[in-house]
Length: 441
Image 1 (cartoon, rainbow, N blue to C red):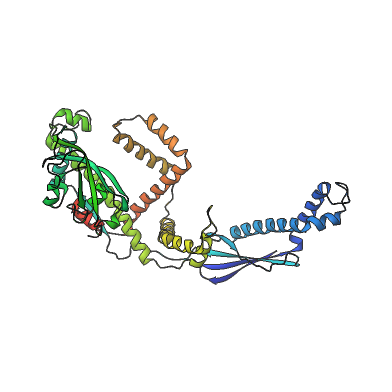
Image 2 (tube, one colour; image 1 turned 45 degrees about the vertical axis):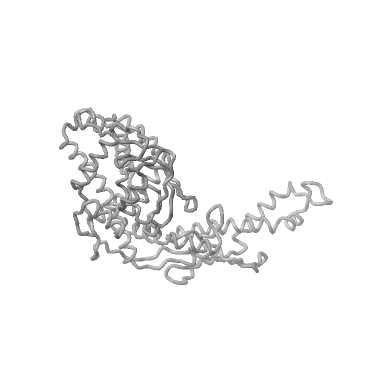
């Protein structure tokens, strides 16, 4: 068998395979011999059919099967021996006039190659690493929310200025139906708040989403509207009142502190504020790291230039999955996934360039930390090692979980690499300033 590659360009090639009689005749003959005792031809008893008639009746189908086996195996071995780094899998070129009776059978396979490119993690950039602080306004607001959350809710008959209202926002045409609770102070316009004053359970109030809240992003919380729509949404929504309560704030005492943080860990209002600040800034740090990771990804994608075998990948997308895609669907899917594919290649290059590897110990350590954090959220602050490792073992026995956690470990290692190499500008901001920077507003 003769196998060669024909280059189309830097990322597209065709593997050409020429198969001759010697490559498959032995296996075809063996299969015909195996078929003889089972062959049934009119005029002959089973097992007594002459070999030439068996070959005439079954030979071509057997030949096609055996040639395909030979070609598939040779293709796999060739890709391995040539150490080809492929995107997708080889696609056979269709030949409507293929002649299975020819002395030499030629098969062609299109392949898409991973491009060669260089990355420079230390290139000059405008990337910002945000350090987000919890200011007094945020901390005081959180103290108020704690007092309200753990206070006593007293039901009242009519909505008053200090009431908390529970109900459901609905707009069927825009598929909005969300139950929520809010105070009247959430509205941007006092005239909107006044629409609720004096209303009772069962009453329906209609409001417009345009400028409804102090911040348009609050539509995401109260109406579950996607971020892409929050600034342009100007529709009427109904709100059906289901409960009206006036909250009696909880007293800031040791009983409340112990309920929130465990016995003796917080003793004063100052301790409470310090704990809120610590927890908030830890959460903000995670959000800031995620933004940094996304900003570096965007920078590298924009500034790392290489060609992809676009036409090949669009054809390949039509062949994978249980439900085959049309050419139009493949176009849409390629456009949706191209950016992710580009960063996947960049990420792999960066890891190889910096000799970053993911070991089972890395995965186990990361999973252990995640499990402890999750247990702490549910009040289990001092689990035993035996308890934690038992959960870790169960989690890591699930292949889907292993894949998900491995991706998180890679992201974590890449984040540390980017912090070291990309040299972002450090900027201290409040959470409000960070939100504005994150949404580009």
